[in-house]
Image 1 (cartoon, helix red, strand yellow):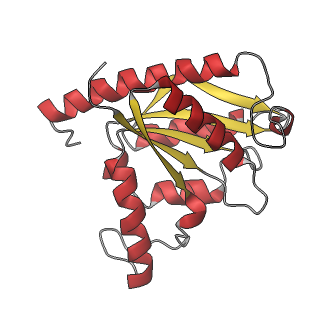
Image 2 (cartoon, one colour; image 1 turned 30 degrees about the vertical axis):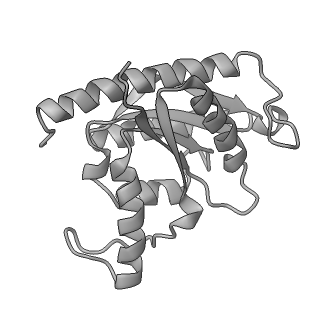
Length: 197
């Protein structure tokens, strides 16, 4: 492990009122800090209201939108790895998350992505499957391990602390281990030979 902590962005993908994502993000952030080897930046997409209408390719957006895009783009670009937290809406990712992803291209390239999904019986697994395809197209690599909370609201106490299921702490450690390994390997690769595809 490198002596330089890996910059890990934890991205909350839902912006719905009453969403459960911040609870999952808080739990995972505590896991990442306890793990060590990472510097965590929690990015809540509710703080970056990007419109659905993108500007023409390569062109700036309206000034107020460009300010939001620049601020979010810097945080995404500075990160060396991502933990994306997503629910599942109608068997897919929330529009807010897909939209935020689509506003950027080079920021994601040659970096690892860990997926953390939550929901009802399906636990958000279909949304996570879609994200694997999306991030592949952006030249990011999703790591093998992931975390999925089925009927997530039963897995956390009222104060947001994790109440189950057994094994989720270990699952978080395994996911962070993979993000650190891939993140450090890709950081070294980008430094030796910048990714230009």
